[in-house]
Length: 394
Ligand SMILES: *Cc1c(COP(=O)(O)O)cnc(C)c1O
Image (cartoon, helix red, strand yellow):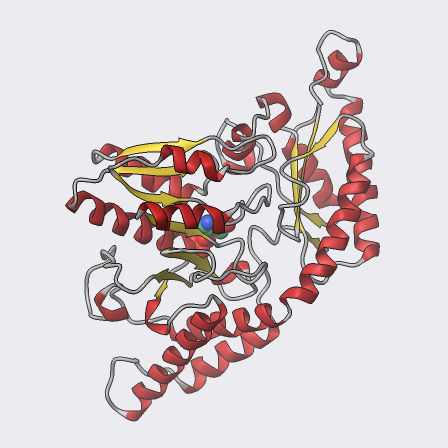
């Protein structure tokens, strides 16, 4: 099996599994209990907080553990909105191609009286800092922009946007779920106020993540109950998951440069190879993109059929097209960068891992080329395109 869907989730690292089982066996007490057994769990928890904070240049007390990226996004945005409402500032700026955890939270806030501006994403999948600046108003309480896009892998000019937000005194939240553990992220250098991350995107376990909130920002609770996480996130902490997350993140961070260099090389080979397929196009910027992300559109085919046939060849990939996401519309990300419906339906995302080899890349290029050619051989849209009844877009 060739797993190239690391943007959906990653396999846990051996070290993370090892720490998780050790903590399950040896530190299973409740960290809120005062006896030694509880306190050893508390120590594991606090060490994880220290380790995670160090990776993103934060203070340990600025890290709040959550159930994952979605919860962190919800809590960050809701908190900034609540602070804004108190001051009569009810305008939020975001982009059209954020993760649904962000977009759906913004939809809810809209129904609660907030005004939302979604910035355009240009063809290369990038947001322009000057457009963020132009959109900021007197009543803007939050700018929320993702660090790197989960479908097309484009890396936003976060530092420049953060600098604008600081200068304009507007809170800046960054969904960094695809970035943390993959590219350098520093909340200090990047001028970030709130940041979301998720363990299962960097070889940690599923169901655990964290929210960074800069000192002085009062978070609102999504979950009421006990006083865990300094009263901001009730519920007995997922100590084994949190410990494994810290281990996975430290590991990813230590190998970050070496891994990224190898992956960029493999990614570029893959892009070069897939470009040879006629009427295809890379989605997103070629340079400002995650080391592991390759995303293409192939005209005249359906993404789902592509995925099924690749599965027969032992390849696990993803598509931003309709049925995979259970809706009739193609990916909102591909539409946001200006792909028309027909083209967006024929998309393929290959998110490679650190362990990919050159032989894997060759196999991917060969398999995708074969499958695309085969699907086109009986596609009615392709026939119309070839007959000149329809114009090629790509
Ligand atoms: C995966 C992902 C999330 C959601 O994280 P979960 O831990 O699965 O809830 C949010 N944002 C982005 C960009 C993601 O890729």
